[in-house]
Amino acid sequence: MLKFGFTNETEEKVTKTLFKRRIEKFYEILRSKIDKKLNNRNGLIDLVLINDETIKAMNGEYRRKNSPTDVISFAYLEVTEHESEKGDIIAGDIFISVDTAKKQAKKKGHDLKREIEILFVHGLLHCFGFGHKTDKQENEMEKWAKKVLT
Image 1 (cartoon, rainbow, N blue to C red):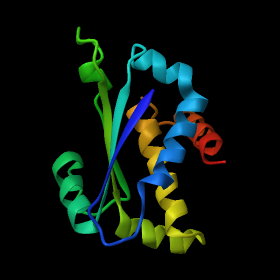
Image 2 (cartoon, rainbow, N blue to C red):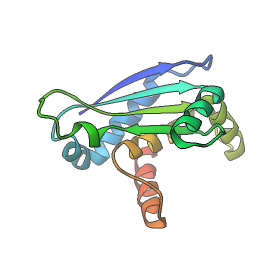
Image 3 (cartoon, rainbow, N blue to C red):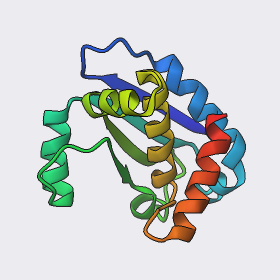
Image 4 (cartoon, rainbow, N blue to C red):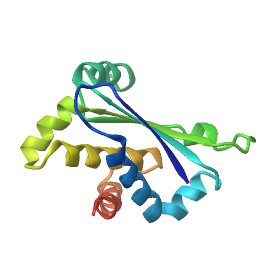
């Protein structure tokens, strides 16, 4: 099972409910993969909505890039999965820039909430080991994202 924490550090009116539905569907679709990674324990995911200034600083510190980005994910499974405790596992933190999401939504022709959902699912996939360094990885990641977002 996935537990979900949500913080909105922006002025944008976005509620936890939007993401709760997505994380439930994500778990429903990828349950066997997630349970295996979590050793059948609960996984904790935190989402924080931030602005471009904050994500630019994070992008510089963690990725050595001096520009804002849309989403940054930190996956912790590798660090925590071998611990002997039987408690919950911190699966990851996801940070989304609402400023960048607004620009991308306008460019793509959909609303901000849809763009944030897309970025959230992208971040979730990263937290559970999916990547997009190769075309094959990117295709697999897109396949799972489409299933979760429909």
